[in-house]
Length: 228
Ligand code: TYD
Image 1 (tube, helix red, strand yellow):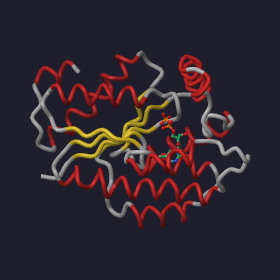
Image 2 (tube, rainbow, N blue to C red):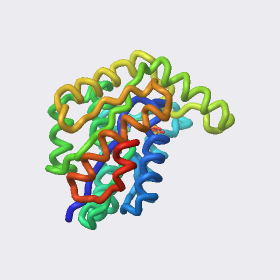
Image 3 (tube, rainbow, N blue to C red):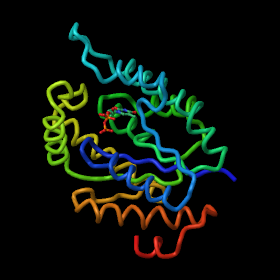
Image 4 (cartoon, rainbow, N blue to C red):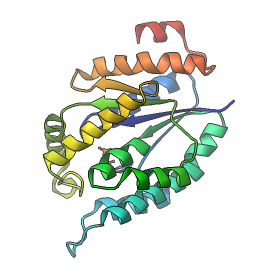
């Protein structure tokens, strides 16, 4: 049996990490084999790349779009080799917080061409495709406010990453690119309105995940599948 790959995507503050955590807890309670991971930073080495990508450098220098792109792909190559492919081969349900679509949305919005994105995709990811992508969609103006509140609650040292500093306009372009990806691949990408109350979002997610897992041969208790 090969596993199931589910990715979560969306602009910052859309709540995808929390939702993925809830989903993983629900699946674990059902006794299903789940692996949860994230990009960038799903491996110990990848965490070093994450720091390089997200921590502003004291010199004031920032990565040019091509260098940034290759760092994300270096992280992804390691993540695929070390975590995703082995877990899939072992028949697990693999939940990943951000994957390919983030690169297409963010680096695309930074000006990297589709051809370059396609080439790196082919080199690193090849034919592997998520069975389901949950796109938690919301207006970045609202989602970035959420991020701000969260950062304030965490204290000074967590304030602002490199990407949070980018302008609202940029995040609007990112959102539009995510939605265009969803439109082009409706069989894979489920657009979940993320402004709704968290419990509603969770139910919407479950209604997409449960049938997929059943089709893949996982046994789910009936009540969980119906009630959500
Ligand atoms: P993170 O703190 O993980 O954000 P979030 O909690 O919203 O997922 O930071 C990841 C940042 O990296 C986020 O701004 C999106 C960006 N990113 C890219 O630009 N390209 C990529 O391929 C990936 C995976 C992430």
